[in-house]
Image (cartoon, rainbow, N blue to C red):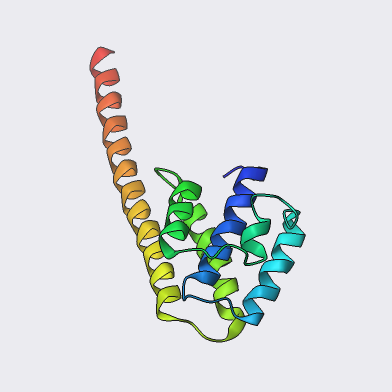
Length: 141
C-alpha cells in the first residue's frame, strides 16, 4: 500500500478509534496516540485533532468503517498484518486487552485469513490457466 497522507491520516484515525472501542481512552493509549500522531506529522491536522484531543468520541462502527476504507475491497495480506500490528501496539500499551479490542483484532485476523485463502485460490486458478495455455501452445506447434 502506498503511504500517502490520506492513508496515514486513516491509520491514525483507526488507532484513535481502536483506543475508544472499549468506551474510554486509557492514559497509556492517549500518550501512545499523541506520540504516533507527532511521528506521522498529523497531530495538528484538522481531520485528526478533534479525535486526538478527545473532543469527539469515536463509536465502534466508525472505527470499523475506517478500517474498511483503509483496507479497501481486496486488501493484501501484508496490509492486514500491518494494521493488526499497528493496532496491537496501541492495545497492549495499557497492559490490558478489553473484549472490544480483542474483537477488533479477531475481525482483522479473519479479513487477513479470508484474503489469504482468496489469494491461494487465485494462484491455483492462475496455474491452471497457465497449464491450459501451455497445452494450447503445444497443440498449435
